[in-house]
Length: 261
Length: 124
Image (cartoon, rainbow over all chains, first blue to last red; front, side, top):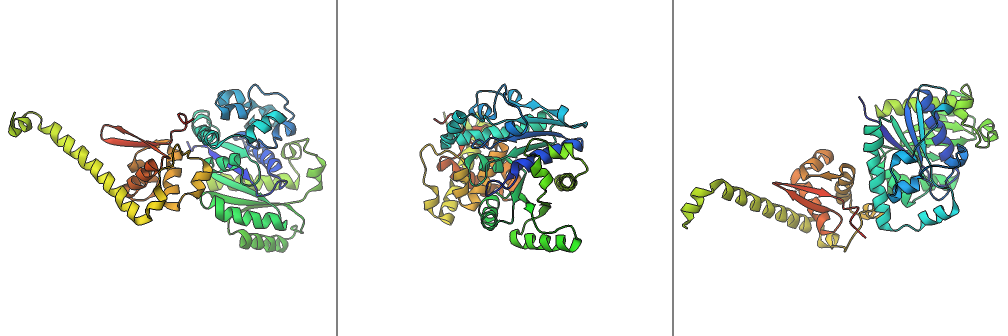
């Protein structure tokens, strides 16, 4: 049996759609029958608890990284929210202000131990519990927690937009971060405003993105008002299976499946 | 007891000892060769150095590759690291020993094998 894989979703700037893409990509894998675990590693601005409307957890990921509880106590089974044979578990970052403050004051030795605990998840979740995918939603930029996630991952998905400062920063990160760790890195171009409904329009943009970044492109996601109207209240790919956004995620998930097999 | 008598009683044991010492000597020589190749400035021991991701980022490429592999495997011999990095065992052995001198890795001997690992729990 093929072993599961770890995917880190990262970006240079905030607001590129990491959490939206992570949640919906996880849901898409589950719709395809996979067993998925999604972990919120954005300890500076935790958002998964809000998106999934889970207010309390027996333990937070903060506790697991602190070494005060096992990962089993952190994971919450929300498979019932996705109508399929797949399984979806989530691990949440503590959204309390005090917890955020506590996490941002950790020293290098703590971060080193946290890396050890993230690396240990390959054994405890992928090998022992048989998850197909372990996904990390991270903080933007060069944060300790995000780099720990990148080092632990098999694949880094970079969510990027065509915003000038995001493009420049992403290019730098590709060269000076992911390359140094020899990580397999793919791009998702999100919030695209150009017309990509025609094949020529799509091809043109694809060539431009590939020239810009020189890494494989997983998909182009246009800016959909329908997705924004959801205001982060729904798992869009689950609620609207026929929507073009969901179809694009279906393609992205299948591409990842093929690439990682 | 004469030399012949000792050899007669424990020839295997003595040969083992010689082999062990030769291996230790070999490792030291590999480190010295590497020291000359990359210049000494790379390998100043840093007291209680944590092998965190920022340290990994700032390392020279050849050492980062080795250190990353130890991180991934948890605990490994030079042979096991070499299988992952597709570099020669002797080269990995030298890099691993450099990382030990720098304080980033710990080394433990079990019989004739030397295991390298990141000591994450004992520090501070």
